[in-house]
Image 1 (cartoon, rainbow, N blue to C red):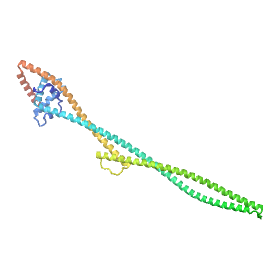
Image 2 (cartoon, helix red, strand yellow):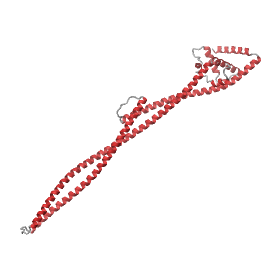
Image 3 (cartoon, one colour):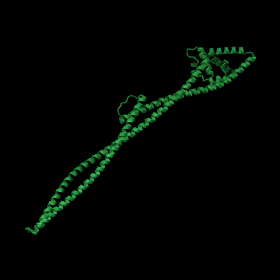
Image 4 (cartoon, one colour):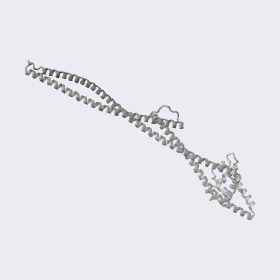
Amino acid sequence: MKRGYPLGSIITTIIEPNQESPKLYDIDSKSHPQDRAKLNSVLQRLSFRQIAIHSASETRWVAIQFAIVINTDWARYTKALEVIKKLHKEQAQEIKTYRLKLEHLQTLKDSAYKLRESIAQDRERAESLRIKMQDLEREIQDVESKIHFTEIKQKDLLKLQEQITEKSATRSALFAEKESRHGSLQDEIEDSDEELEEWRVKFDEKVAQQESQISKLERELNDLKETEKILNERIIQYITEISKLQTEADANELLKSERDSAIQKLFAKHNLGPLPSGPFSDEMALNCTSRLNARMVDLEKDLLDKKGCIRVESSRACQARNSSHELGLWLGSWLGELGKIKLESARLRLEPRLCSSKARFVQGWFETEA
């Protein structure tokens, strides 16, 4: 291993050797077969589970081979590490972006639910107002028929009043005639008492009949006046109720206009297709709301899929960090053991022969593997 890289820097920059490691070291299918076989062999022997079963000599061999690979392409290794760090940073930025999109979609979902509730309430209120208007129209027709009947009765009453006036004038004339005749009773009357009594009884009966008819007509006139007063009050009440209903209908039309504007904005924002410019019917508004809900469900599904991919990539990155930490610890122990080997070789003055024998052993092993 080169002396320009301290132990701490190596431990913190080691990552898990996986299937992407050959690509990051610029070793692919077009590279030399011997280089690729050497790297694969070293990476397989660096597995954490296999280290425990290797003997001391094989561990030293793996350390030497790993040092050869690291020292040969250390710049590529550093570049690969920077690529992984950049990937982590981009994934964190994507997670933040998707969270913002999720919050925006949640806001759209709440708006759609509120819009659906508002449409349902508007439909209920419109139906209630329609029923009330139908009831009021029936009542107005009844009142108009009663007013027409009252007008007819009033005309009849006027005729009766004219008749009463005529009869009163006739009565006054008859009374004056009676008085004049009573004044001229000095003359002898030739009629008998029975005839006079019969004439008096007939006259009294006729007067009583006329008075009874006058009383009846006066009672009918009073009843008609009272009925006219009640009907006028009800007409005023109905006019007030109609004004209130008209105000509520105008408010309902304003709410429908706001609903149509909100639907058009949402359709334009999410590119759901053109819409007519005129006012929407309740059925069309409900259809548009259903399309908005379907679009929102698709966006949520897409977001969940992307979040799942991000979780998988994050899990792989975490596993890579954990494995790199374990590999760094093992590398520290390996460097200590390598130092002991070098000290022992220097003390016995056998390091050149040891290296040549190990090189021959490694070459023979690679030839066997090839």
